[in-house]
Structure formats: structure tokens, C-alpha cells
Length: 76
Image: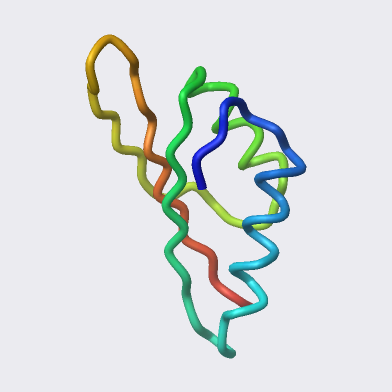
């Protein structure tokens, strides 16, 4: 999903959609590219309490910083 800011509702919708596709004891990788402050995005994802952030990849594309959040969700 590509979006312009750390809108918690967008984060929650994406994570809930991913969680619905999980099998018991399964895992899903959610790759999210955002053009905004890394800390704000991490706070939004962590505040959703739906997935833990397990890895962060930062890439430089032109003059913009694109933050790829690699979040992993597991069903209890």
C-alpha cells in the first residue's frame, strides 16, 4: 500500500485484511511504502497493536526518503 502519511485507519485496515488471510499459526508479510516520517509511521503501526514491526528498510529514491516497513503478523 502506498499512502501519503501515517493514517492509523489505513494501517489498521491493511493489517486486518492481512490477518483475515492468515491460517492458524500462519504468518503474513506486509510490505508498506510510505513517504513520511519514519517515527510517525512506526508509532502508527505499533499503536494499531495488530502486528509487531520486525524489520525496517530505508531506501533513497531521488530526493525523497521512502520507508519500507516490513511488518510480520502471526495469529495466536
